[in-house]
Length: 238
Image (cartoon, rainbow, N blue to C red):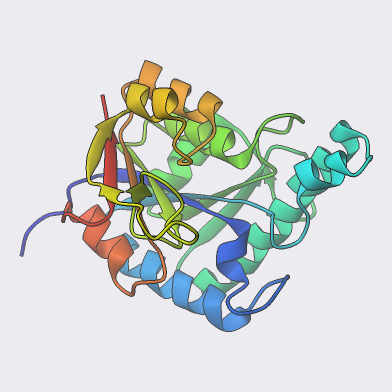
């Protein structure tokens, strides 16, 4: 049996990944399916951290555009990520996994506060760590939070799970002529303004030479394939 290509990974999920066919909220069956995929990877001996967005519950930027104070809107969005992290943590625990939710906004009765060395200890003990509440600051996306936590945890790669099969020249949902790009550099992502992660997150990954794998979460087994280093989706490398 071949060995995983990575020892420690950070999986970035959108909040919308938990919706399934719903228009908002969390579909428990979808959460269970995602938990199965993550558990499968953890059982390979890979250390897994997760950052999940909150767009299925509340999107701060959208609320700000409609007149809400940006700081207030972003704080609400960060709280939405805590709800999603708790839901996914519960699904993982039901698969027999040991999890910890660490939040950048202190709420001790709900989750542990984020402390870097404690998070690393959890990973070393094969616990699945879910980082909630973004960076704890407004004006930063969960993409940037994922990049930051990946650096702090010394992850080998960020795995960005999406609804499409990688990085395309345009949005494949709306542009039939869009073609997939199998591999490219961080600087190309920025120069071509490709919708992979926000510019701050890409720049952080580029400065720290952290690769990004972008793949389709809706295809069963893709998380395992990505961890094993199989050619699935697109890769962003230095």
